[in-house]
Image: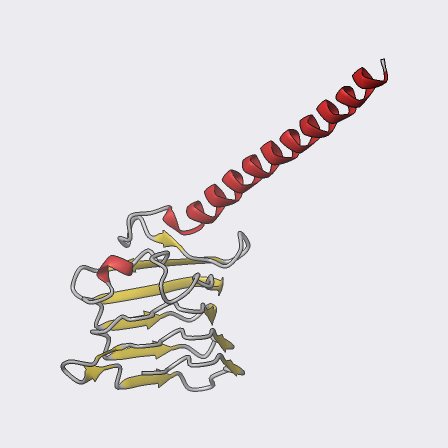
Length: 171
């Protein structure tokens, strides 16, 4: 009888661990789905832009015109992207074709790694509404082989910029 009680406790412990693991798996899957849908919505055109706001309250979108221009518009903060090695930026596949980035008034923050390795980019316009630029936002916006890259950064008159993250404009 004592032996059965011991086995019963072991079974309960194993069952609790299994339930905990299942909950973690479901939570992880849900978080991944939320993370992916945060910017995956949209095809990247003006009529169907990518959603790149940092939170649900930030309505920031992005779209390309097919001729090298990437436009970021809306109100609020742009989301941070994972890292330099990540392909989570929706324009990642177009990064070598983007020559110009226009960030429209209303956007308050440029996300970390937003334009990482957009090697054909030569200019960006940053509106007065931007108060912060994330870490490595424009990191490696150059082509080392051709020695070309981001040469013109225009800050709008009356800029409210307060913070520039580490290596934001690093080559």
